[in-house]
Image 1 (tube, rainbow, N blue to C red):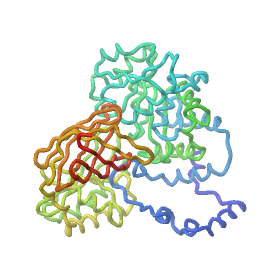
Image 2 (spheres, rainbow, N blue to C red):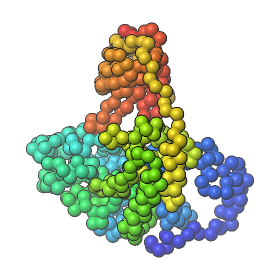
Image 3 (cartoon, rainbow, N blue to C red):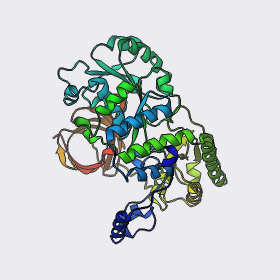
Image 4 (spheres, rainbow, N blue to C red):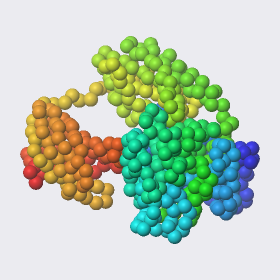
Length: 515
């Protein structure tokens, strides 16, 4: 099957040819000659991704074999229950696990797995999720080392989160109400008192499944997490494995994985929206087929070679030093290149270089870096295509030799923002007047707190002239993450300006002192 799927696209039939001919007369997309033009035709600028497998940057590029499998799968109808059964068995063979499931991303795999642990495929229970009133399984245990923003995929099923930090707390928390234990894979888990092996030792005698979130990891065969005693493990399909962006994997205990399929689309209930089509399913299967065939050592050597080429090009610039950093752990396992320089001598910071390259043409996404008072950038090769390394080296050299104008320096404060402020925030579709800022100003430095609709968090900021800029954050150690940056112009006892909420985009705000 893998060999058949690796073939190129099938020739189109007469009906498909007619559709293609009609589409060719449609502007603007129908007039495109190259695939790369499809985004530019609607005003979206593609980029060179040297930052990593971030979903917001569209993860990784699908392998050619994956694209061919998707094209082939799109040309016929199948029954999705039969497809899930066949793919599940094949994934089990390829990964040496009991069974597998293709989901619409890793987060969906976590949700389906959680629902399987709660309802077990029982439709009387399934159709009531996320209202767990009357359910026996109502809690998920999450060790403190695993609290993160992605756990929302688990709590969305309606479970109460119980946090533990020690083996004693884990043992005390586990009972008949415990549906599962959720772990975010990583070094913090491996080095913890309650690592995956310990958690499995406690959970297995009580019949409590252990679910591992390994979204950004490489796929280990045999699976390291299942080997440590976990029952289920979930992966992102569109990161290291290079499958479809809208796909993920769930591997492990056959009964639970099969129940996860029952809890997912196209079956009805709360998870109907997490649909994965036959195309993504076959594309993801092909990505796993290719994972076991790929020469990973050769890929690693190629990435390292690209980084050395970039390092050679930039090393001739005064004060520039380079180092290739080898990865630790399994997540985003790739070497990276750190390029550092004396910011004062070259007259440019790593952040300015990063911002300039991202706004430039070609558009390049890097990470800013700093160490021991030196500034710079970090380059990840995993997402690059051949030739990208030459573009990055050229643009980086030009920018360091002829840096852009530095940002305008801060001005002495002309206002004092000390006091309590009542805010009105206007979002995309809605507003809130529940937010408060309590500010203290010492020269140009601002400290204080930001109270939102439900939580209060510390803030820091600055005043430049009559402009105030303060930032508050609520970290993912709470199982969520909120980052608010308020920038506004002060006029007496009033402030107005823009609110940057990071991944939640932007809003506008006004504030009144003492209101």
